[in-house]
Length: 559
Image (cartoon, rainbow, N blue to C red; front, side, top):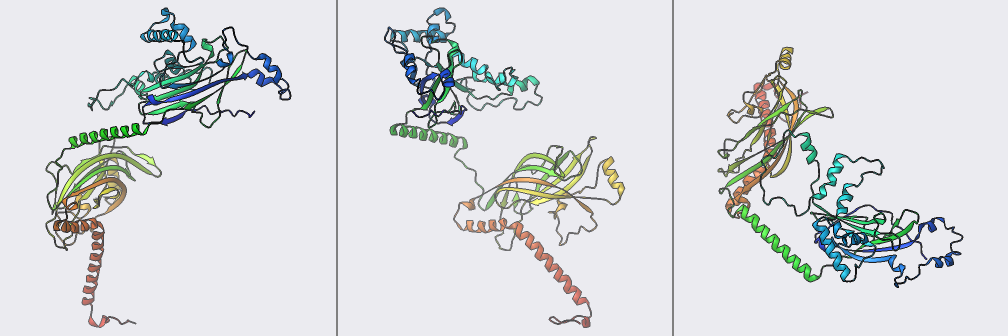
């Protein structure tokens, strides 16, 4: 006879199912092996010699004709939340005085019907459903550790009471806005009461009465074979896992007569028939179709479009962080400057904002202030000049970083600017900042003790101001100091009829968008070429101012 391979993994297994849990079926097979005393103390050399003597211990048929061998092996198929009464419950609920709750009286009526119809179909295997008293007590008294003197914590006690919430206790339908979404000053009792997971859960225990023959119905012989838990999300937790290809589980009873039992748990849920799958597919299709119609009714049929020849720009941005600054308690003032030509914004659109004051946190060698401050705006671009030489300008984001001290005095920590991305999508931009400085120690002492520092009257002076009309912008004499960096995260969306039209307007608008898309690169190349042209012009002027005898003709070397 082959040696039995026991399964020692009695941990939990988690499954997820989209089918109704009422279709779950488990087959449990329980069998008594033999006395564990014989297994522990029988010498290996005398094992075959004593096999003949074991026959004398075989139980004989009783006067009623019932053979105890039939009581030592049992197999039964159990459905989800199917109630199988134990011998203890049968003896208990036959006495009407023991019934206290409506559930007890219901169980009494069912037991009386079973007795009248020939008795219950199970002998040793029985179940405790989610409504039974055992389920409440078992989950309330479960231990978190293996210590004999364990004292349950407050969280353990609260988690044991979570299962009191049934799935039929739903919240109010609809999205009713609570009056207090954020509790700014939570009390200690409020924190203790809300520090619990709130997931509806149903539990079921498959049990076995492993008592001796004709001594069934005692609580001390009850053992848990399997525990099943199902939540509202379709997550099924089985402990221990289904047997499958693994070996059977073993149970060794305690007491004077130690017995060894083995049992297996298999999932025998019926497979869905093709007709049922097709019907379920049609139901889901109809459900999703109705949900789509519901969402369409919320959005409406009128979709707001831009005027022909216009580009609509949406920006959902976030001031992520600032780092590398001298002082603490930072906040950022930012605004978006639209070019004076071709760009506009709604009348009530706010193009500026100020973040909250944030303390810094050491991250490596730098101190970082995390703002996570959101902002949003929209703008319109209407292209009227269709000549190929016209290069459209793009909005610019300016920022000013300031610090606030204990006496509510602020200091300018830096100025910065960046051109908004011309392509739609998500972008993360890091803006380097600088601040004007004065020479000497007096200015730094004033900045440290009484606050205040040099400031720019016009923040657009960080780049080329929009009001500047000259050819050259001189910053000669302006002393600056490089400070830290500010990180922005921008999500840009663009809307235009040109994306869906196939007329000549689309071609003209497409050329504009192509130029807008490469605006940053074209602008930088244009600046470089312009600098080369200016240097070449100065060299030409210097050459013309020199005497003719000192100027060598092109292509000759001067020794």
